[in-house]
Image 1 (tube, rainbow, N blue to C red):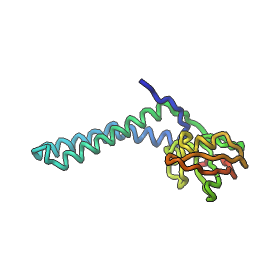
Image 2 (cartoon, one colour):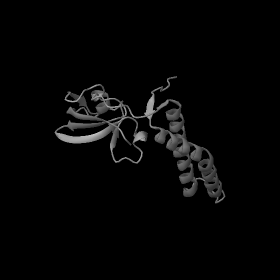
Image 3 (cartoon, rainbow, N blue to C red):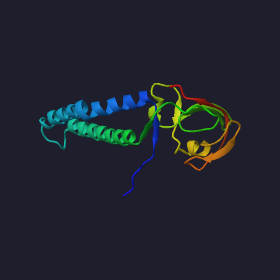
Image 4 (spheres, one colour):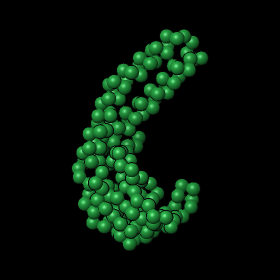
Length: 162
C-alpha cells in the first residue's frame, strides 16, 4: 500500500476555509445526502429511479472530497507565504514566458488560491516540477502530457499575498 505524504503549504485562511468545508460536509452534507437518498428510495424501483442514482452519485463525489480534504489537512504546513528570494518555491507567484506568452500564476495547491484570480500549478505538475528552484532569469523546458516540449523563462518571483 502506498500513501501520499506530500506536504502542502497552506495559508491560515486557506486552512480555516478547508477545515470549515470538511466540518460542513462531514455533518450537514452527509445528513442532507442521506435524506435525499431516503426520499428517492421511497419513490420505488431503484433500477429506474433517476433521483436515487443522482443522489448516490452526489454522495460519491462528496465522500471523495471529504477524503481529499482529510489527507490535505493532515499533511498541511500552515503559515505565511514564503518570502520571495527570487527563487521558485511552493507558495510563490511566478511571472514567466511560456511558449512565447507571458503568464502569471501561483505554484502550490489549488486550495491556497482561494478567491484569487491566479491560475495555480501544483509543484508536481509538469510545469511546476520543471521550474521549482529556478531563479529569476532562469529558463528550462518541460514536456506536456501529450509529449510536446515547451520553453519557459522566469521573469519574476513574488511573495503570495492571497
